[in-house]
Image (tube, rainbow, N blue to C red; front, side, top):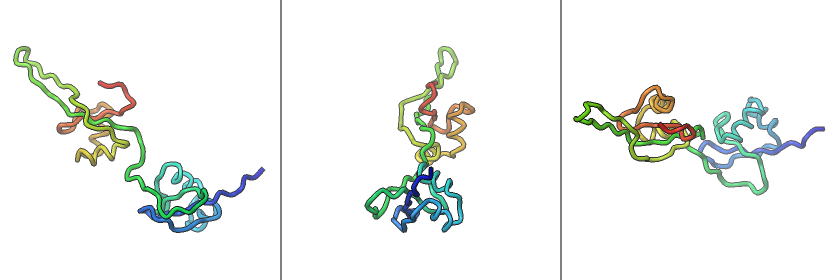
Length: 143
């Protein structure tokens, strides 16, 4: 049993409506790509061949909202606190107050002006902090 073809809409990189294709295969043929890549673009909100895609579902939109960041593992950002206890000669390092939660490593890196790899290394426990911030994946057990 064959399923009926699903029409798809093509949008520019800034979200403006460009064209409707009668099926995924027609759009893929026109842009010389595999239909599965357009499906991934639709489900993840990413681009395929420089365009955003969406299944056609009735009235044609003029534009779609475009996410700046792909959704990945959420990252919680905290201030890094380091205090020295003169009595015991020990430095106590801990997570400070919560700042924000980001939808991806890249968003956290851009927001706090630190390199993306430093955010990832901190989330994975390779380093404790970067500058005055510490980062943790939101779905992991807090330290």
